Each structure stands twice: as C-alpha cells, then as structure tokens.
Picture 1 (cartoon, helix red, strand yellow):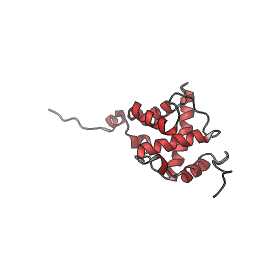
Picture 2 (cartoon, one colour):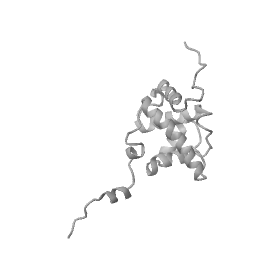
Picture 3 (cartoon, one colour):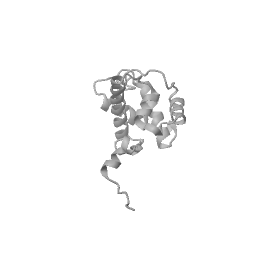
Picture 4 (cartoon, one colour):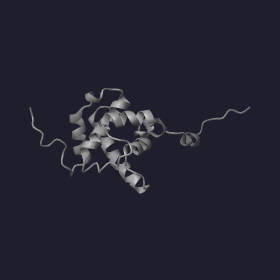
Length: 144
C-alpha cells in the first residue's frame, strides 16, 4: 500500500489553529498584541458588515477563533466584559470603553490570567496607536 504524503494543498484544506488565526502569535498581555487586537477588531467590524452579519461579541469570537469559540468560551468572555453576546457593538473608534473591556476579557480567557492583571495602560496606549485620530482613552482621568 502507498503511504499518503502530506502536500501543501492538504495543509491549506485543514482548519487553521489559533496561532495561525491570530497572525502566528498567541494572545499575550503586551502592547504589541493589543495593537493587533484593536486593528483586528476594526477589520472584523468591516468584514461582518460586508457579510450583513451583526457586529456582536459572539460573531467576533466565532470569526477570530472558529471552532475554538465554544459556548462556554463565549459565555466566559461575555461574563467578564459584562456584556451580552448578541448585543450589537458600537464602532470601536467612537465608543472604545466597551471594546476595551471585551479585549481585556479575551486576553484574560485566552492567556489564562486574571481579568484584573491585564495591563490597562498598554491597552489604552495601543488604542491610541490603532486609532490615532480618535481621542485617547482616559485622557481626562485624574492622576493620584
């Protein structure tokens, strides 16, 4: 019997893993990853709009993680971000606080760290890099 050899065509047909979906990197708690996530969120909004699909947490997670976005994973992200999965999300560039909590929850769940240990300064700075023409998050916050 002949052995079936793996060809590049067969590799293309297989489902991509999480690291391939995330651009070759895993989700991490640093500014570079946060910039990629902010930009990916905006691209996903445009993609879902072009497909006439609702821009909600459930559809974002399903498009990012595919079959790995189980109901338990989606529930955990929604629970941490204190939002409902089917609710329509506003534009990330205009209403960033909901999206900041969403990205914070995604990183916490995927990286397996506490929701409260996410580097918010890096997340806010990444927003300013991803959306340079928008008002930075927490620009008027008082310093202690």
